[in-house]
Amino acid sequence: MKRTLIKETPQLVGQTVTLKGWVNVRRDHGKIVFIDLRDRTGLVQVVLVPELAKDFHTEDVIAITGIVKQRPEKLVNPNIETGTIEVEAKETELFSKAAELPFDMGKETLEVELPTLLDYRSLTLRHPKVQAIFKVQAVVIDAFRKALQAKDFLEFQAPSIISAVPEGGAEVFRVKYFDHEAYLSQSPQLYKSLLVTAFERVFSVNHIYRAEPSVTTRHLTESTSLDAEFGFIESWEEVQEMEEYVVRFIFDEVNSRCAKELALYNATIPLISEKIPVIKLRDAQEIIFQRTGRDVRAEKDLAPEDEREICAWAKEEKDSDLVFVSHFLTKKKPFYVHPDPADPTYAYSVDLLCRGVEWSSGGQRLSDYQTIVNNVHEWGLSEKGIALYLQAFKYGSPRLGGFALGAERITMHILGLKNIREATMFPRDMERIDVRLSTLE
Ligand code: AMO
Image (cartoon, rainbow, N blue to C red):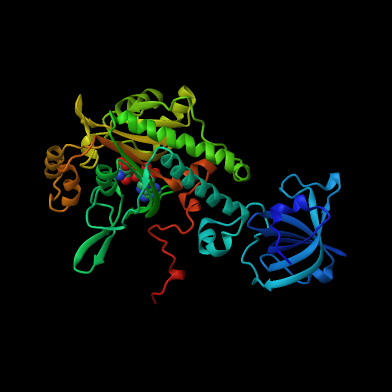
């Protein structure tokens, strides 16, 4: 019989259907057995006589043919979408038997520690609450694409094996690439900027690699970067405005497409005021000093606790979970950033912070060929090493800028997850590289 998807069952009362999926939970009540069956579209309660329920247990893959029955009012389960019905089994079939489980998969929340969650990834990714994370992430990435396509940006595929290090030298993975020195890309930065000189507006969804030598709750060595870059801007504020538009778009999409997933985590979309506040680094540091007495006013960057404090300020004073911090120190930024002509110590750079953590960096880039060349020398880089980038500006470039958002950080903070690894299917960090999925001895 043709397969019916679980989400369709409430519309099929009185009809015979065949459902295929995994046993989520089994409950034995003497002469009657209940199985919550799961497929990619949801959960449904199936009622069986013990002979049909056989020895099916959690994660067995089965088929059930039965009649969809309306549940009496007092037995309606408001917690599942199919809660108004149940399926009375007439026939069952076992497709695949699951081995004994290492932990209880039937609970609403998987009660395992992070290492177990990741060591058993093939199994834990089946849990509905774990799946919700990646459904939200898929919508975040899809919304990023849609937002930029609507503004006429072209998607490009960024290379991962590169020979230049755009974001500074410390955190790179070296790759032995035939007779060349190569790296895993820290960022598609140089490619996206040079592509603006050809296509005006580009974006990419790509992996970036950072040899982060520490284990934190917000750093991965391989993460998903949502990069955008565009030309003919009048000022760095246009970059920040485009980013604000994209973030609003993402929030709207997650809100309208992920209600069920947000509810599982008791999560709400970050509060976004009519206009996300924008504040310069030095002003942010002054505010931190005024609020906490901690004097960070001469620091070259924001420390994690500063980011938390400035987010707390935005929430309290501006009714916003998000805040842009601009004008970081030019010398702390890569060679391509555009200094503010009014005070070149500071750059036309802008980070977006949300719920205590940096979500993105961006800003206006240098576009004058000779200025870039001078900077390359000043930053101690090799002109030959980035000749392809320089070529783009040598032959004419509009004024340009862009930004990059971290997909895992967005997912993590929308759902209130404690560790970025939870928002990554197969996280890479100093200690983890799936040795159990390795062909190396
Ligand atoms: P940046 O280095 O700030 O900027 O990276 C942009 C965003 O990417 C995410 N991110 C990470 N997420 C998890 N683990 C990591 N190790 C990690 N590194 C980065 C963060 C961060 O805000 N070229 C610039 C972007 C630009 O100017 O357009 C860049 O790479 O969310």
